Length: 65
Image (cartoon, rainbow, N blue to C red; front, side, top):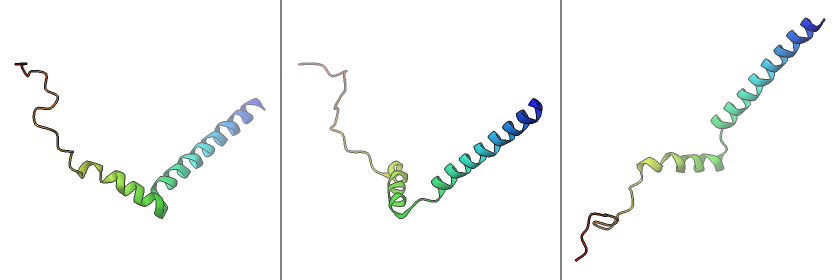
C-alpha cells in the first residue's frame, strides 16, 4: 500500500514539475506586445555605443605637477 502511494506521489510530482516548467517556457517565449518592446530594448543593449569618456579620465598614473 505504501509503495503504491509513494509511486503515485513521485509520478504526480513529475507531472506537476513538467507543467510548471512548460508554463515558464511558454511565458518567456510568448511575450505580449508591451513586453516584446521591452525585451527588444534589452536585446539591443550590446549594440549600443558606449558613452564617450574624457581623455585620460580616471587614470591613476598621472603625475601632479
